[in-house]
Image (cartoon, rainbow, N blue to C red):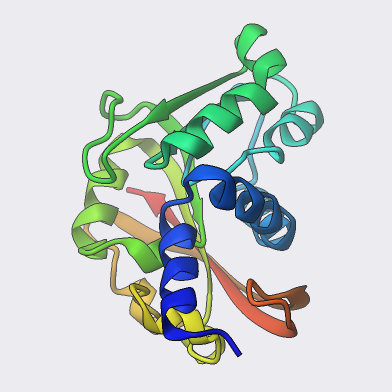
Length: 219
């Protein structure tokens, strides 16, 4: 049984991976989040010629196979974690050199891109750590070109609240909560996908995770 201090440390690393512990956890997150990340990518129906932005990409080892399967797509990644930013740059060096990917650090609030820069934006398992998700979503919508798509993929509150570490620093949501993040005058609902999968939780237990991808289109 993990102590409260151990659970708090795990929660902090999930929010902002750093150091050797963060690097180890990043590999686990990449593996357990891959199905959710793949769902988000497919839900966006990414097309050749599009520019895609991901927030909170972790070690980003999923980027190379995604780009290999999607010709003439450019990927940009934003991270608040210096460790994850540096690791993603190493893992995806070939894609960076070829001009198909770029990675930047940011403060979690202000985006280092001009308005209307992207065709698609997605974030997987990051909304738990956003203090003001409605304002954040509005800012993100400004980065989308007209008819661009925004996708949030997340595990449901009913699942997440069963994990002991989520009591420390996580904001948990059900589908109806996340739907309220979007300004209906700016974003219109495109699709909702719900799924379940068996994964190894961060504290080592096998669990059935229920997750959702919500996609909006920019008006």
